[in-house]
Image 1: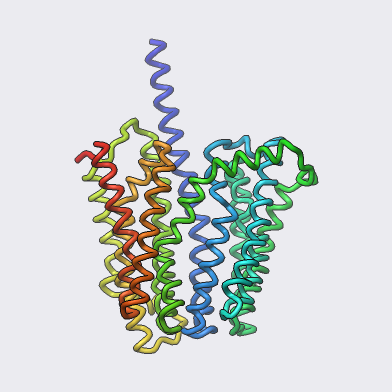
Image 2: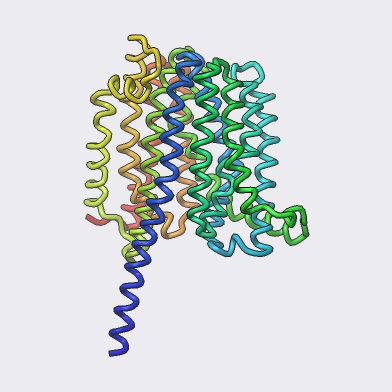
Length: 425
């Protein structure tokens, strides 16, 4: 009788924990989508003020910044959550982690300045690149790991809400009142908008003990950076997919085509950002079960669901562009070009859906190096294919070849799971 009672208690605890995990996942998704939604709204007026040509260059600037943010993180957010949990917010461990994050951010800021001077000196975004270096140092999301590890959900919400309000106010004044029409002014406004949320995190997490660097701290940094390599590689490799099309268009196509690509790319980024949360949901579901196999039927149903949801992007791309970028002064040629690019790029969502469960299964089984190698190999293939298209083919083929990485990684992952006999109907 006692054993039955214990089994029932354990069952109800697991169910409660599962619902708690799902609730936390939904909350994190909500606060992130809040920022993404406001940011996408602001993109309308950035595009209107800059004009269609310069908006393409602004897309390059934002992609550069995102890459350097990934370098600054170096997989540490995932690693800290996986290894330490709540312990990351306590005692000497917290001090060491905070010192590590500050060190990575400072070194990456220096790297970003060097990159700007070497590769962006004669580019229209050079000044903006230097200004966003300060954005790297004062990221609004710098203390997210602290709030999540410590389960300070209210503080995380206040931080995101504060950033949403400051971002809306600063960008609203910059774009609508001052009508800023230069990339560097808009970049400066983005940096200023992030400061309130950053300093909110400082008041919650920072202390004078941060300046106490010991031999133990240096050893901790070395161990963490070494452990974070596969996570970092997987994170960097993500930029070898659709964003490569932007860089190829910047190098080999006209400014108008680059801008058209950027419009389609922004919508795909928003959709992909929403799909990323399905990985978290998938992981929660997988951890609730001991089954390590991938079920083809479940993947097919999920892919069909994403195909249904994303079908308007390739059926009515012009209408979607007009809705999402309502403030842009469209011309018929630019709208048609952007619509064709969006129609092609939208198929990336189907390939993402077809491999979502496979990625979750790899992460659950902690085969991080396998995942990092597959993602990197497919990303390298995408870079080569997309660059060849830019060199030898017409501009309109660039978005098509930018899907090469999605095709390759999806096929390789399925082949891997079939060969390891983990794919079941």
